[in-house]
Length: 134
Image (cartoon, rainbow, N blue to C red; front, side):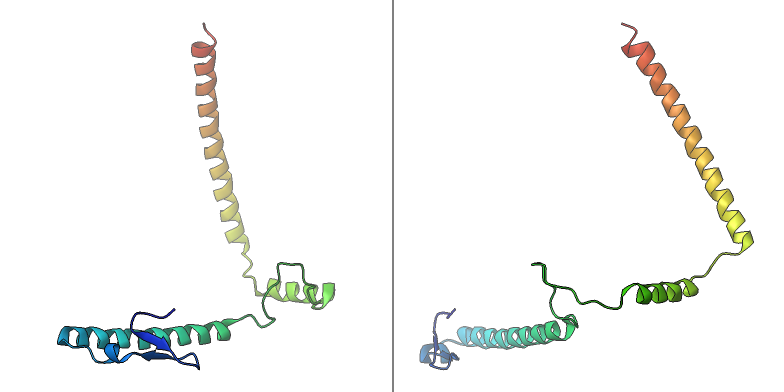
């Protein structure tokens, strides 16, 4: 896309026309120099973004949504070995932590159960006495 006052040479590079190179009043000169700085910044930003995308690409290439074959990585034995390794990293709770966590769960279940019982009784009386009384 060529802007006003720009031309593209045979190699695809942009060239400024002479009128765009030498603006007549100083305000236009400042304006054109700042636009050139912005273009060079945009160009370098674009290059940096392109380089970043290339560095961040997945190792196995792009993923196909068209149903491309997945490579097999080792099967069940590899899975079991990795699962065992992960389970060894787990910080398992001691007996005191287990008892405390169990008590917290039991108390939470009792509180929520009582709340649901109260709401159910209230709504059932509302329906029985107000809506079905007529």
